[in-house]
Amino acid sequence: MNISKIKIFFALGLFFMGIYSCDLGVSPSDSISTSKMQDPSSIVYATDGNYSMMKDILEFQGSENDGNTYVRHLTQLCEFNGDNTCLSGRTSDPLYETATYKLDATMSNISYFWWCAYKIIYGANNIIASVSESDDHSMNELLGENYFLRAMCHFDLVRLFARPYNQGRDNPGVVLMDSPVKESVTRATVGEVYDLIVSDLQRASSLMQQKYSRGNSYANQAAALALLSRVYLYMGENEKVVETADKVFDLVPISNLEPTSTFPDYFANALSSSETLFAVAHTAADNKGQASIGSMYLNDGIGWGEVYASESYLDLLEQYPEDVRNKFIRPVYTYDGSGKHKYWIYYSVLNIDNNNLEDVNYEVTYDTSAGRYKFTDENGNIVYVNKSTSEGKDVYSIVLNGKTQIVHFGYEMDERNGYPKYYVLKYSYQDDDPMLSSPVILRLAEVVLNRAEAYAKLGKTDEALADVNTIRERAGLSGDELFSSTNMHGYDNVLDVVLDERRLELAFEGQRAFDVFRNGKSLDRRYPGVQPAVVISPDDERIINYIPQSEILVSNIEQNP
Image (cartoon, rainbow, N blue to C red; front, top):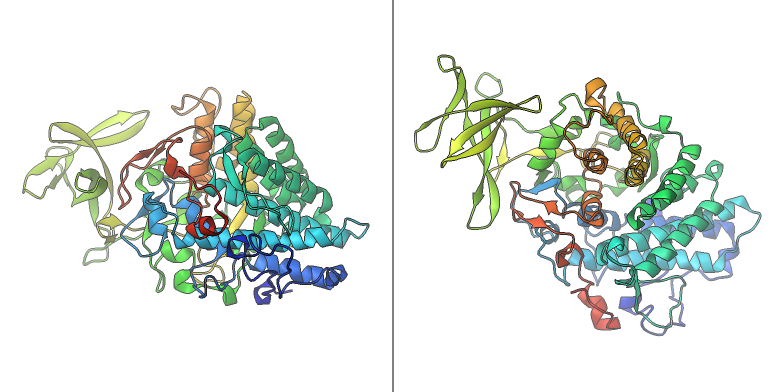
């Protein structure tokens, strides 16, 4: 069944729009009746409708907006507040507020996301309330899929609108919806929400069997367990992370990782890859064009191309040029009249007027008589570049205002507002369309790294590094480029090794900020871009979003500080 064509919605609105907060006993006029829920074809149709709401353009507050989709807002809300992206200019899209931590309760992205998440939950709850577990494996599979969807949406909500689990189970969570009808609308605690998520995923995995999977654009047993491993990781239940990850590998062996040779094309072909555990399937009919996820990352005849890979991410990635993950980044170079790259040197300076770091760059030449590189600055002064060695790598610097300034070499690049264009390709080129992708929610590599982090926290260094090396080897690295307990490449502890590998592997997939804050670490955003050059601590109030004002006005639930 082509789910892109299905638009079956159980409710005209969600609880802040009146479903849960008003006249709770009235069924929406466009819902499927309980009696019809006993028809297997209706269950398939309704379940597919729940998936479809993740990508479809739904009418919200009286209008339809191409940029309003669950998966687009999820991806941007989870990624643009991290340290992997550089925003190159002001934009009217509310992603700007996310990227700059200028949050408020009227942002259209959080309002739509909150509404749509609970709309999907409502649809899942209708099926869960109407279908009983039986000997019919196909029906059990569908029931399990809806438990998965309910768990996933609650998990996305509690991550975005509540404090991290490790900061306290008793902190305000989100509204917990475990049935189609609620007598009252209140915020459950973080712990209560996580408990439901765990229970739902356990139930989902017990109901679903891999051989009855409908494909990786639908939930299946491995996907439910993979998400459960992530949830346990957020909860600090490290033994359970290992146990659950092992169950995933029993179903989908680690050998199913996309091979090194085809990994650069993985995200364009995610739906056909054995690595993908769950992705939101998009076809050409679902392509949002300028409103697609890839549009902000890339301009290839179409697309805004305004969000680039950050300098700090590139510094980590470029330590190993042969790492095939470099191919997910496309630098946009300029050329001289003969079609050759122009060589330049660049470094970052702080603009004290707006607290942003800005790149300064100059064309560089090599002075054979001095044996050093040199360039001419904006005042006409010749500046020589000094070379030293640190941890076996060449380090270049200049003396600027009496202080040593680290500089970088590269080819001269095309820029936007002074920021070099490093396009990100993880959401592009499905079917050779630069704006089309099927965003990956869960994949095998993440489960390997979930287990690696759990091993690190359990003091099992060799096991943690073995999992890290599995991912590095798939990235094309070998020999001394791998880790061991006797070769930590300058790292003080194995957890930091794992977290950096997670950053390399899962960049732009909405993981980074959560990884940092849930581990009690600060996020260093001191790199070029229009986002303020600041360090965000894990106890900063801005790491969670405000509950949408439209919800507060109707249900009067507690707002985040």
